[in-house]
Length: 401
Image (tube, rainbow, N blue to C red; front, side, top):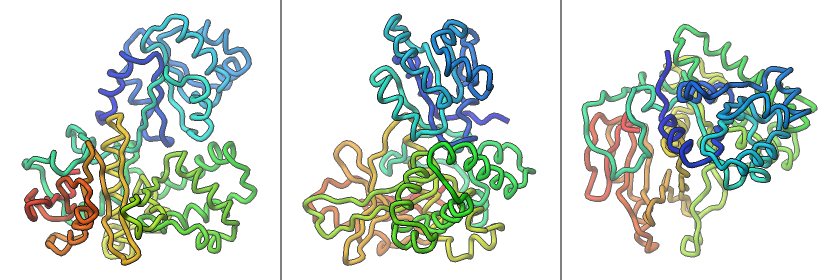
């Protein structure tokens, strides 16, 4: 079962305006599939997973591009960075649009090679797991409180929502409901460490690295404290910083930075960590059933992780950058999310409640006190209707993400 991806329309748009289109993202989120579903019959497909093809690409890239002519779709481009200068020369020579489609999983080295060789010639798109909108067959629009309109979509109750959170967003798990999620995620982590991590960094103790990833998952939705993680994992602070960077650049986590300017002098400066896939996060933390997850100690943090991930995906799957932060100051006043668009800040609060209250958004007033331009706010929660909470804030059911 194929689920239509929001990114498909962006692929068609960028193919008409750029010589090269690259999709990055974690393994098994559907990068190859979305290209295959979008490609015209004249486009040749070749994968560098094939050892013989990879050898040709690395050892004789000029012959490779003579053998496989454009329009060309090259899968797993990170295995042959030697191709980039030749792709650049081909693009500069003909100046045709849509000559090359590329996919790559290892963003750390991949983006360095891209910036050195193909700056200005390539559209870089990012794909994550299935969004809530994609699963429900709806158009996935960038989330913004004042763009929401009421409709007849069904509301999520606690257990249906946490069931979605527990299952995660990898297309293979969604398409095959009989697949054992624990076996899937165990295999995923094994492949991730063996095929990506070994090539990105020198990990002498893979067990320790896996312990680190589990420690990171247990801290999703929390402020990132390198020293505490270093102590728990038994590694240096610099090692933890390096490993966090690897998780981020390989698309497994998202770091939400704190809002800070010359006016907000009392705001904190430490980012918050979020996993992109809540199913993987739950697996790493040992949550196995909907009931234990919904009532467990992490139920608030994992819901916040789900909401933040969905909002980030709503922008990235539309080919847009999300300018967003959280706010927390030394007086413990906090706003879960601030989205900046068109010079305005849209405050968002995330609540595991079906009865939002005015008191939930009391800290939104901080923005006007600082003289910042404020857009309509939102309380994202388990209420069943899209309604105003007050003149400045909407009650937004989770189903509207």
